[in-house]
Amino acid sequence: MTDHTHLPPLRVALLGNPNCGKTALFNLLTGSRQKVANYAGVTVERKEGHLETASGRQVVVLDLPGAYSLNALSADEQITCDIVTGQRPNEPLPDLVVCVVDATNLRLNLRLVLEARALNLPLVLALNMSDAARHSGITVDRALLARELAMPVIETVGIRHDGAQELLTYLAKVDLAKSKKRLKQQMTWHAPQVDEVMATQQEVRRVIKLAVQEPEGSLHTDDAIDAVVLHPLWGMLVLAATLFLMFQAVFSWAVWPMDQIKALVEGLSDGVRGLMSDGPLSSLLVDGVLAGAGGVLVFLPQILILFFFILVLEDSGYLPRAAFLLDRVMGTVGLSGRSFIPLLSSFACAVPGIMATRSITHWRDRLVTIMIAPLMTCSARLPVYALLIGAFIPSRSVWGVFNLQGLVMFGLYVGGIVSAMAVAAVAMVWRSQVRPTPLVMELPAYRLPNVRNLAHGLYERAAIFVKRVGGIILALTILLWFLATFPAAPAGATDAAINHSFAGMLGHWLEVLVAPIGFNWQIAVALVPGMAAREVVVGALGTVYALSATGEDVAAQLSPLIAHSWSLATALSLLVWFIFAPQCISTLVAVRRETNSWRYPLLVTLYLFALAYLASWGTYRLALMWGAG
Image (cartoon, rainbow, N blue to C red; front, side, top):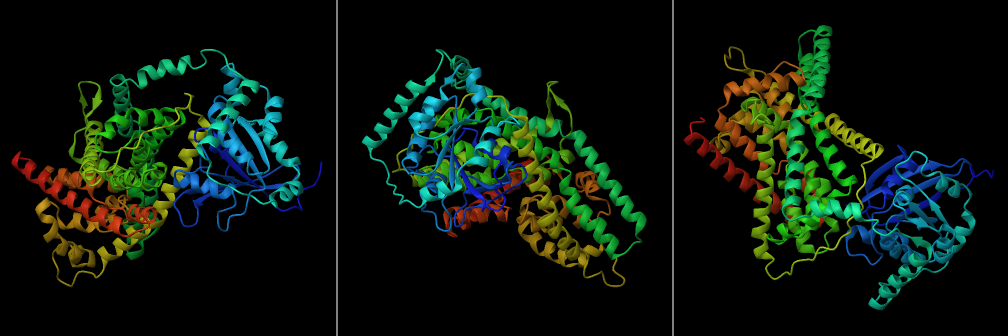
């Protein structure tokens, strides 16, 4: 075997339609040897990984954003087009382009392959999901397909541990020098005219007729499922039941792992107390580090359960159908079904949800979706919701089936959704001259979610959350501990020492503003660091109330403490506040980067704070009227 260890890395780009299994193949090839960032100047996600072939050749793999055509209609498609046509500044042309296609849906996938072939790039066709194609009775004549497309054709299965072996073998022996020689040729690209598009489609049909045999009725199973899932009534009930189950599970399934995390951090706290005498350093570690960061970490199981559902819905092929189903509903407020997936992503985190709006072709539709994405109840709100619901809502069953706390949680999510649709409806007046954008999208075949992909996605989310806890959240809680500890109370003071601290002074100044909505000065102090990250509020409340327990004891002891010292009206007002308040600097930065203007994040901040204050004021007053004071 030829030794390639002395050669420069082979640069390979994965090109393909959305839902073709390209990212699963990328994860299989690169494993943990990958990094995720954004392309320079835009917020389109960039995934780059590394692998080494059996011959010792180093390969850099780039997972390009999914695209249906090189005639770009959105920001992510434009990135893909620019890279494969050599028009992306500071981005070298790939040595080799792997055209990843869904072997069960070649009729849709081959258009992009033919467009790429016209660029004179070195190409290889990867028939991904080839096992699913054979299972469906689809036969592909690889030799004939390779001849007609004038490129090598290999088989891959991105969800199987040995599913990339044929591709790895090809990468180990591909002639790199020949590839670079071809890349020196002049490359031209122009958007195709209508007659060129029609000619490409005719060529796709010709190749499919020659090289692919499909059994009659191969889509009967998917069609039978879609008859229910896409039904105007039954489909909406299925979607509502799915989302309801998701929010019930966030509370019901997370109890045991949360208890284990609590026990772990309690042990750490006891260990610190046993090793250190009372003093500032001990207080910093217990009341600052463990109370703040640990108080947030306990909610990791709930966040992972939420992400698990989102990943399952995405991997199974259900999400595009939910978008299609909701297209008519969202059309009533001037949006299309394309806004559904970014908004659903915002339930996990508004930042990727805002980034996902790049798939929306019309700028005003995209802008409205960006503006309402922060109203989706992101996972960062879960620690606050869980604390308040656990303190004020009894844990009992309703109708013998449902958990009351889960019902309240579901109601908070519904409140965010209804508010978002109301804001979009108001914005529709501003867009009254804009015609609705028709929804045209692929409905992929149903498939069972892959355990490897689910595990990889949950691992990534857990790593991001833990890094966040160990980074900005830890720094903020330590800062808040310092502000709540210094300066010390003067000699002879009989009230709590925190009243004389910087945090106490700030809280008493802010109390004038928040008293009309039922908040006390302790809540006011906790909301300030919560502007950087909502999760900080739980640890901040623990610090402000001078709890000496560990982080998980903050969640355990803070709950009965606030239940005793706050009224139900205050708790309800704070819950409503978090439906609206834009307490996340990362979200505002994402809006700034996505819109390339400070005007829109400022507008988001102002209108969300206004809604939060008005809604909390109304909730507090109504609760007082109903005797919840």
